[in-house]
Length: 103
Image (cartoon, rainbow, N blue to C red):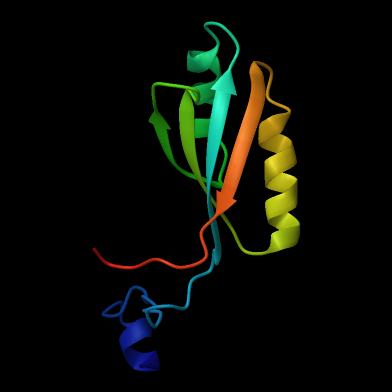
C-alpha cells in the first residue's frame, strides 16, 4: 500500500459505514411559522446552517418544514435555540424521529 501511495497509484481512501451507524443520529422535523413576508430571508439563513438537512415550503398553519440532524441531544438543543432566534420566526413545533419504516 505504501509503495502504491508513494507512486501516486493510490490517491485517497473512502470509508463505507455499516448501515444504521450514522454520524447524525438525532433527526427531527421542525414546523416553522413565519412573520409576514420574511420566508425568503429565513430560508436563506437556514440554507447556511450545517444542521439543516432539507427545507420545504408548506401551506396551512406552518410555512416551512425543516429536517434537522444532530450528533447528540445536547447539540440538538443548541440547534433548536439557534433556529428559533432567527428574526421573523414566531413559532415552531419540533418532532424527533424515533424510527423510520419503509412503506
